[in-house]
Length: 103
Image 1 (tube, rainbow, N blue to C red):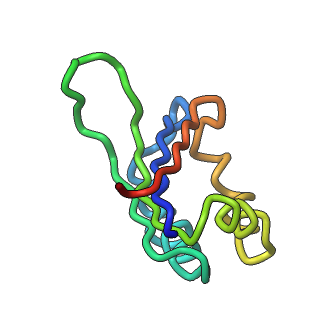
Image 2 (cartoon, rainbow, N blue to C red):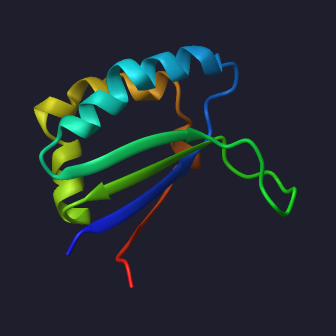
């Protein structure tokens, strides 16, 4: 059964959002969408949140074969550039990923 992953994170302090968007469109999104186990990978800049409390800056909506397959894909050589470059932008301490199956 297919798995939906939602990943939320903040950018590091001082990161230029426009540079992050450009990198995401040029490297992250094409790489993720080219992975055989990935059916859809979309990235969103969060503009607001209903409770008005601080939340996350970035949300990723990912459809994959399974959580385990996605984890393996992110460790492959095809994903190496993303793993190498993402830390320039993302705050690894803030990452929250949840994986779900549709009811």
